[in-house]
Length: 310
Ligand SMILES: C[S@@+](CC[C@H](N)C(=O)[O-])C[C@H]1O[C@@H](n2cnc3c(N)ncnc32)[C@H](O)[C@@H]1O
Image 1: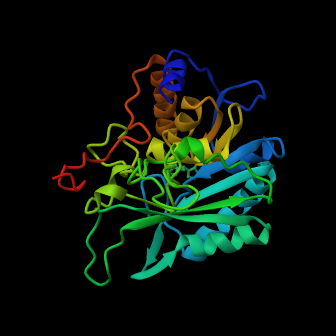
Image 2: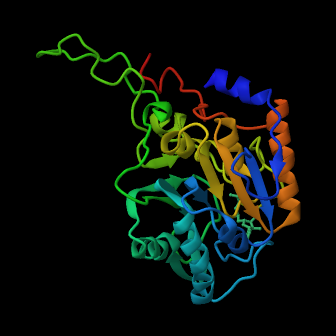
């Protein structure tokens, strides 16, 4: 990882404003549906995005739930076309609330992707410890990411995203494997719950905080992806030089996760102010001045007591 970071940091990436197979980074201004229609079929190894949630954020007007949902159907149809036959879609959403009633968006989107015969590989729960307190229901503390593949043949590289085991040196104490390490020396599978559950140091350490004011990646965008959240998917679901597409790219967090790891990146964004920040962040990445939380950075340091090392 460290050497990859150094290699990418010294490289200035030109950001094109329309797709070209030889480009490394593309951000197309305007409506993503129009852009997606121009992309070649099967070009994207990974589509990773957080679509508008219809929450009335400054970049969206709040619609009736059914209108919001139908407006995104043509976009999904185009995404289905541009995902590679061995590619993946990671669709990250929360809950939409109308008159106090909760609509878990992943339930609705699951049906849509199933209609296109996509296969769900994980429903990742991204748990965060802080947020608004509700008085008429329990406070919401998670979002989900649906990871679909287009077919049964797909890339899944587990080793680059393993996290440290709880007891890395633990050995089999009897049987044929007596004395050998019982776990994988590269670490364990990070599981399908990604959280910042600070009560439990073991799960807390290797997890992913959301981008709030003190986070080094915070920009003016109200709901950014943490770069490390996307990085885990980029490293596991793509190979070097593959294309990663975010049709709602905001300030470019998914694109940065791709470029930082020697993948190619395409984004679409309708708001010029976010698009300009994305371009600046890509320039900062090239100059080695981008602020980001590295993948696998501990959220907190375990105390000796928490580690049972009295
Ligand atoms: C939930 S935010 C995604 C933020 C992004 N993940 C990041 O880290 O910056 C959704 C983004 O999609 C953009 N957007 C909404 N509708 C769009 C459309 N039809 N075409 C292109 N961009 C759109 C919004 O302006 C907003 O920046």
